[in-house]
Length: 305
Image (cartoon, rainbow, N blue to C red):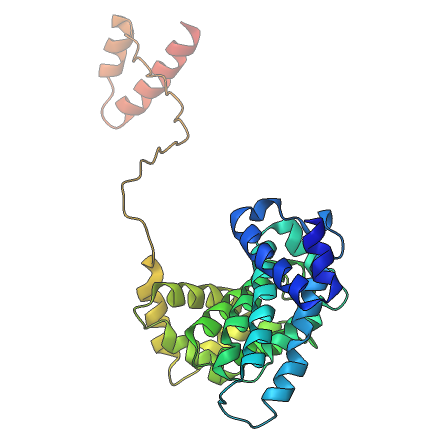
């Protein structure tokens, strides 16, 4: 690890190639042991490698350029950048590493730069690695109205790439979970929300699950609920959400034990047997006076006898 770390920081092409290839292997085989804090400067060097993607993209893909036939030098450089991103992605799955990465001075800006790369297919692999990192690091990122990361994730919701849409949905949910006081998620435009409404009708378990998680976070704000159910398709989204109430539900029997308050035991009152002379006296009265006399005498006899 000392050689790998020093080789990566040396900038010597052969040493950098060796370091990256070894780190890719180690991050797969022994990812739990690859702790950023244990190897000072290693993570920073990997992020610096990612930072070179901007100049590479500007050189080979100027603004407005379409798909090009890349030369071998470009392919080699991009391959090494992807390896660095893969190592960081694997490392970020460890909570301690994710926390460490989120505190790096320029780490967040490098992530945003990578996600804002041109739409050429050669950069898709890198963007997927970056999205996985964002999802793992999201709970450690700050979130504000002028956030630089959120608009990038928002733009990906309209992408034609399933992986970018799925990764962005998951990352947004992690970013706003339990702390969207400024309602940043409410700034997502109607076009993206309509896209999400359409996606929940697909037979795609992962996408549907991610969309439902997003809508759950989105509807925690009453203002967003009003926007979601606006006509003409407000009723339709309610129907679809009702249909998906049992999405990924696990069938089975559940034993429920009901406990209720115990009713007080009411002691049965035994009607006393009156002496014969009292009975004879009662019989001398006509109804309803007899019943009234009987109640009074019975009550009095019960108390004193």
